[in-house]
Length: 261
Image (tube, rainbow, N blue to C red; front, top):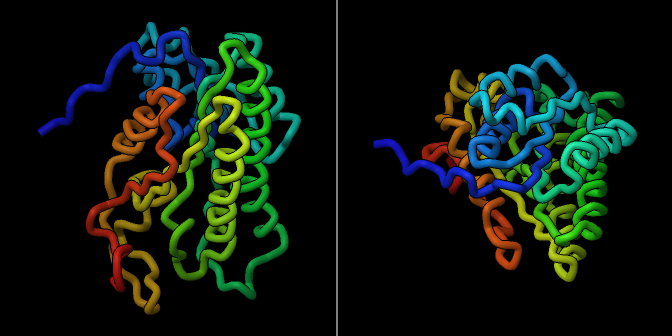
């Protein structure tokens, strides 16, 4: 049985920035927000993938979309991204901090210098650059305030084996969420985090076929449609600013996460 339709038009007059919008969860969230009436700046490293995302939206929704090539690990590119939102719409109401890197499973002592720097630069530093730009606008715009939603991971709670960079950055992202929520509280800026487990995307294609477990074995794991993540993020964004979903864990029901397998 299909779920109830989202509230169309709830985002009318509101502006969202979605990073990593060229595929997977970012694409699903950008399309969901466009469908709910938001104007959306779609950011990602590959402009052609962003244009593909925009093309998937209904024709009237495309007029409210801006595809902006942006590597979030480059602070100048992030400033340009938010400058585009300024020029097009003059404010930012929602940031979905989603861009992320997931290196191949690698033992701790085999992680290279550049591999470590890359995952930290994208997953943590890039998220900070984006949050900093959003926060600056949200505290000064009129009406003041806004919402930042960080895409964590169940790895922010428990690690997979051989994922030291990814796990460390997702734990750190939780600290970023807490700091943003605290500093934003008197300014009408809400910040929450969604920790996702096994949404079906390009990054998780191997999980359904078989992935490394904590006991050293490999086993297939269930996945779920990323559209459910998009609806959850949009519902978080739709709350009035006096209410906040601080933490949400959304996962495939049967994945080996609760308990010991």
